[in-house]
Amino acid sequence: MYEKLQTRTFLAMLVGVSVAFILLMKPFFGPIFWAIAIALIFHPVQQKLTSRMGDRPNLIALLTLMLCMFIVIIPVTALVLSLVAEGVALYQKIQSGELRPGEYIDQVVNSFPAIEAFFAEFGVNFGDVRDRAVSIFVGGSQLLARQALGVGQNTFQFFLGLALMVYLAFFLLRDGSTLVELLIRALPLGDARERLLFAKFAEVTRATVKGNLLIAVIQGALGGSIFWILNISGALLWGVVMAIVSLLPAVGAALVWIPAAVYLAATGEFVSAAILTAFGSIVIGLSDNLLRPILVGRDTKLPDYIVLLSTLGGLVMFGINGFVMGPLVAALFMAFWGIFIREFAEDQQTAEAAAPDSVKESSPAERSDPG
Image (tube, rainbow, N blue to C red; front, side, top):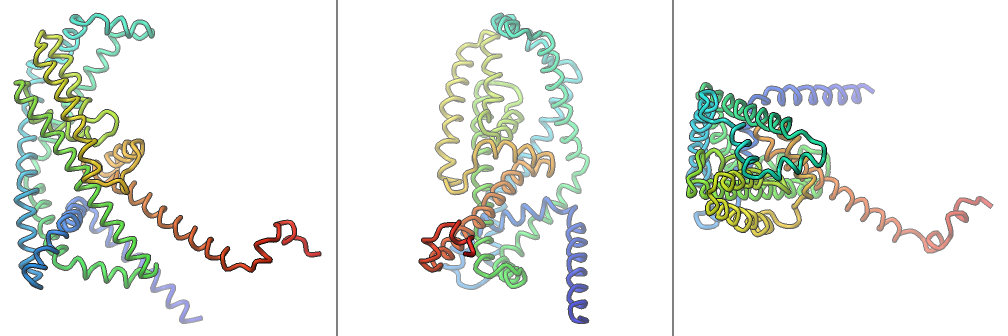
């Protein structure tokens, strides 16, 4: 009895200390997550270096991290800083009246009167739609400006998180395998099941981060490039916006380039509108269909409605990191349940196979009848 009390007390304290540690790490959740993602994504690179250079964990982890910094971290940091400047400039243009979204909408309607007639057929007042669209655009630009100004004002915090992410990534690259083995020994789920779950976690993380995020970056770069070629102002900003919305299925980057093409046609720039429409439909649109099976794979691909809901939910719960973490959580949810269903089905089939033939052949009524 006393031993059971000791065990229960220890487990309760273990849970309490673990919860306290999680709460302690909560302010650094973003850097920790991206450090884990970097370690998982660049683990194949680390393995190749190990096969060529031998067992030199510190040097191999450092070389892998340096490669990651040149390929990912430094370009993304430069992009974020450029986005800050673009967001502040957009906010200032709206405040000064240089950008007038309402006038742009009116210009499109004047060039295409069928738009207003289309809304009138359904009993919708186009003036209300116009005002709502203007308020959404202005509100979105203000939100973007506040986020940009927040990054600019919290430069020290931004670079502190970046340094922490790099620091953690080094140790995860060096000691990741050891940490996984410790978790397998600690978790009471069975070693085989735990190894399967960790392998699935690594697979889903690589597919979600490397695949979805890389596809978003490619589509954003393509969209920003065509905007720059067509001399559309704010090409960098709109490229980043296209990268973000491309994570959403069904609409994606078209949510940005279609209104831009319509506005170009309304202002008489029919050649630019045709080029943007063709480029958006063929190059940007097909890039997702061509790259996603290669980078993500078919086994970890989520249904479009799950991606949409998980992305929006992740954005609400985790902030900007939710664009990746939301689909990752959804993919892990489906992976865990897939493993559970597969194991349960196998256990059930094994039990049925091991049952005596007389039990298999008898009906449920016969088995339940005591006489």
